[in-house]
Image 1: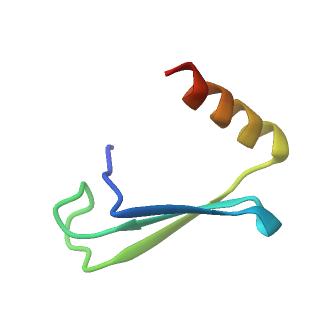
Image 2: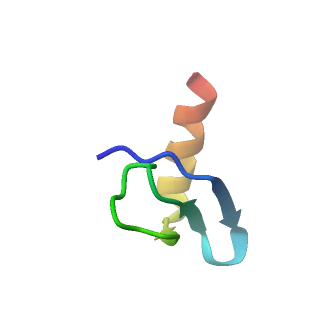
Image 3: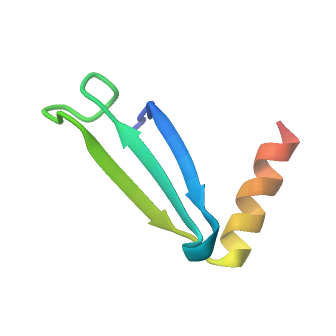
Length: 54
């Protein structure tokens, strides 16, 4: 599944990524949904390393 969030933000205190998605962005039947993913410091480091490679 692929989603295209309208907004993405990160909360350092809880190591949480937040994705705000709306209809037509890969999740059918959703008016507005907030997806939160809590990362370990190692996962965050790997994510940043992957982004920096692009």
